[in-house]
Length: 439
Image (tube, rainbow, N blue to C red; front, side, top):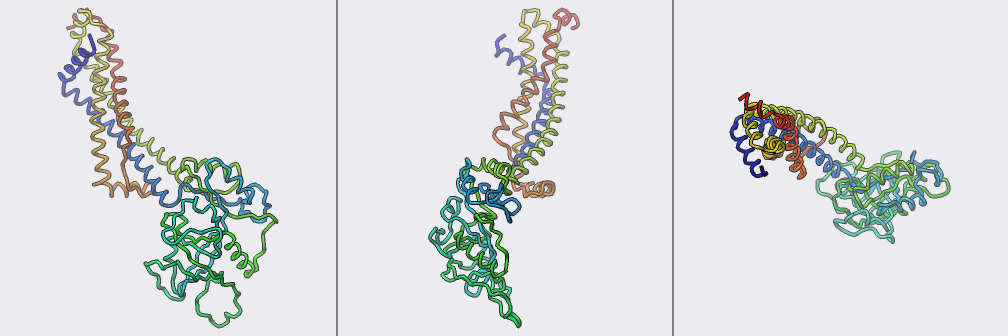
């Protein structure tokens, strides 16, 4: 028999016992739906994790801190951020830019409004490599002196000292006269006895722009040339009688590292931490933990679906075994007239495979319908339930990736063929004479 004859015979046999065939296919449909929907929830959860983490931080960035804060340690010590260490970091494969960071908390006065901000001093020569975009104004230049660019959110933090006059409308921070001082009570009316307070220097600065919203730490700080912040910090520490912790060569407490390829951020992060001895932070740390959690959930959910498909396989096996008992005479006649034993085996395997494929295809269609309902009608209720379990804002509940289509069809067909293997072998081994005698 050729393959066309075998296929036609298989279809006739399956349609002859429609109810039994339908029940066997239904088992595969349920199993396929269970696996596809369960895995789609895991994929949707993984994507929700990533989008949530991306909204909290830049996945290209690694924040590097000197081990132990770098306090009182020599510049050549492992885990200390020095100019030499920064040069070595810049040479790491995948690193596009690196800058030391000096941060100082100051009172920023614009007109009658004051805000307490963290000012970060950075290397302005590499600032643009950090994918920093200006919404209004211009970028910092190496020749700028006492010039500031503001993170987008900081513009809403200014208020009149002594008054609760917060405004939803951000103030205009592009100003030719800004006061920076370490006096956190700047702008408040003096009280009796205030003459004995420390006298902080008031530095005149200029606001030259503010950043576009990035949804990360850059939104909540202001930025200046590194040497200007170092000057302000030195003056504030002198006023506060803080000791100088320098050990000769210049060191920094913090640095920013920008990795161009987001896939290599974690690799660079691990190298800085494990090989160079720094303390590091990156949003990819959260992402890796989230992926591990998501993979574990996918395995659990997929396993539950796999049990359903195993039950379906038993149903297919039962259907094929019953089919052999009912078609014993047919099998005997085929053997007597000279049918190839392998053709008989192929016929039963093909029937089982058709049940698996048909159930897989129907299961995929139903899975897409269920996924659509989960992402629309049922999204709010399911999202709240998933959020309570995983502590994430699951905006997309179910995502069926393209590879699930061939995977589900292939797996369900394979399950069908595997379930039909023993019955097919049994049919092939039946004695023709015994088959005709029993009938």
